Every structure is written in structure tokens, then in C-alpha cells.
Image (cartoon, rainbow, N blue to C red; front, side):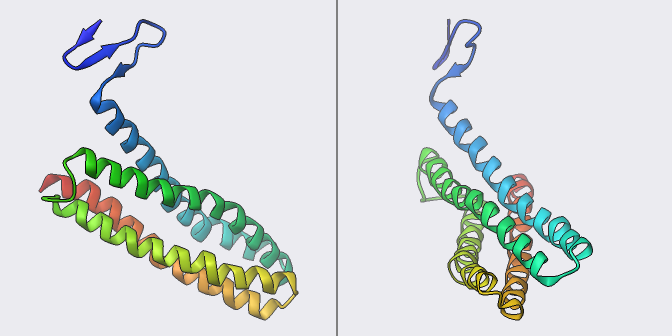
Length: 173
């Protein structure tokens, strides 16, 4: 069965296959990655860290738990950030390239570059120093590094919320 540029596979595979499907797939992956990254930051900031402070009385316990939690979360963020840029550029190219982009796409890309730079700094420098301090039981140093991570995640979380706002509100203009 065909529908103007699409091929519809027979049931149970009844998926539309066509030029727009690649764009829709890229958009779906893009939105999942953005939700994972920004939602994960919100969860870490508003739930995980405060719960660790409230329930783990000793700083060594909290710092070990936060280092392990962040390590696991950052694996997903590494993949998400990479896929966000790959799918974002793919959608831009599918839409005709960088010339004549809508202002919201330029704004999202600009903010994403800043967010990725902040994340790279957290991942490559601050978090690495925090893990080293935890491994060496240098608790005041580890706590200071975790506080730096918290502050930078707060900035990235705010920027991420702005990107969601630009993506949705910007469509109206």
C-alpha cells in the first residue's frame, strides 16, 4: 500500500516509511535525550542530593553515594549530549541546512553549546577531582567539588528549562 511518498508495511509492521520518518525518528531521539539530561539534573538536584543529606548522616557516606550516582548518571548524559548534537544537526540538515534557520533553532543550538561546555567541565575536571578526593578519603575536598558540581548543574538546569521554553514558545513566532 502506498500513500504519497510513503510505503505502509502490512500489519503487524504497519509503520510509515518515508522521508519524514527519518526526521521524526531524529526528533524523537532528540526529545528523549533532552528529557533524560534535563530531567536527570532536576532529579539529582531536587531529590537525590537532598535525600542523601537527610538520610546519610556521615559525609563519607553521602560523598561516596553521590560519586557513585553521578558516575552512573554521567554515562547516560555522555550518550545524551552526543545524540542531542547528532540529531540536532541531522534535523537542521534535513530542513535545508544552517542558512535561514529560525531564531529558536539558533537559540537552542547556542544554549546547547554552552550547556555542553559546562557539562564537559564538570565531567572532565570537577567530577574527576571529586572522585579522586573520595578515593583518597579527602572529605572536605570532595565536599567542595560536589558543591561546585551542584552549582554548575543548577546553571545547566536553568539553561535546559530555557531551551524547553524556546523550543515550545518559539514555535508560535
